[in-house]
Length: 500
Image 1 (cartoon, rainbow, N blue to C red):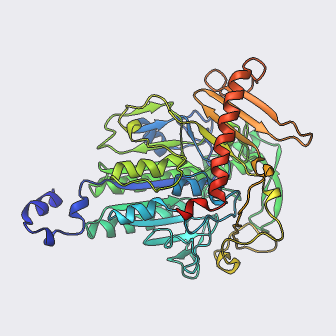
Image 2: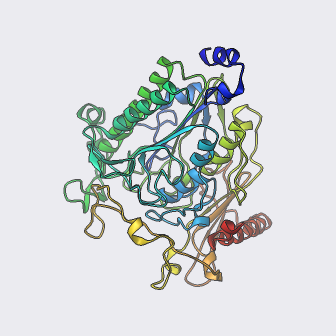
């Protein structure tokens, strides 16, 4: 009401406050869990994990039961989340690969539209230090409190690209507290805000607060098989009973869930909830150490649905006043084109893999008109000793330490290589296409003939029955579509999109 009165009282356009022209725009909060698989929520019927806040969001907003990460691992999915493009287009093939400075992010687009933009938590698409050409500031964020990779309790985080500082406490709570401070500043400045919160939970190695751990004290006796993960004590690999691991992992999920609840309560208390779009998803499927084998096939790192299906939830009371559940397939690549449509900004003039989901928000989309594509690029053929770095390696060196050591280091460095020419081997790597209810999965074989699997996800969501013999025409069509899409992606990989 205050903003409306100001707009009515001001008679000279030169006197209009910076925010008044954006008064109708929603605030936007996009959150993502780290390794949080589809089944690990109460509303999806998990037998153990407690997520009362996500369950409430599913009961009051738009519950997307077929939401996919664009890739079965973290850095690539995050690149898609920010750009609307498949990560292979920009060489973000695997965790630890940066994206490229020429990419256009949702933060850059929203900043131009008058939004205050901030990033909190895991970045993992390049170094967070200020000198990095792909740090959050370089990619459109006005503020950031971020980590190069993942983090546990008492995380080390870099504020606005400065030296890392240890923040005492539960990491999800810390991120949400910082996000709330940013939101309050934006509100005071009468600016719409765009906030990305990428949690460090529930990525291994696991840790939890005593009260959260106590909720799962019965699990060690129920799951006794040994699983591999990282030791919090040594930073190296270890083997532990799965029940102990699940107890700590689920404690992290519950703490993250509670932190999201704190944010939602603050939005309500400040009168911001109705016109704030709040989104949550995971960045890939459940990791192998924690997967219980249901209800989907596969785990993190695989293009079966268990590796790419994740929770997907949207709340926006002004536009989604009644709860709905949808089975329309959507993905992290859809976020940028959807935001562009919501705020009335044009898409970047380059290939975009995602689609505008705004009709889905209004209950007007019943099917996805464009296929979904997944592709784990075969990095074994691209990482050559003579490959030219896309970014100066010194600028790709990380600064924020984490529990897991890699090559004797507690920090993470990034890489990205130029790829000026394309050969037939560049098309290799596990890949899949979903068009309608059919999904084609292709795995390369050392013998030369790739393994093809065709599934009808509507009747066989667990991907148990290969229909390749029964429906060869469908498989042939999907294979052709997939190959054509790969050609487009590889053209982007050469840098051709940046020359336009």
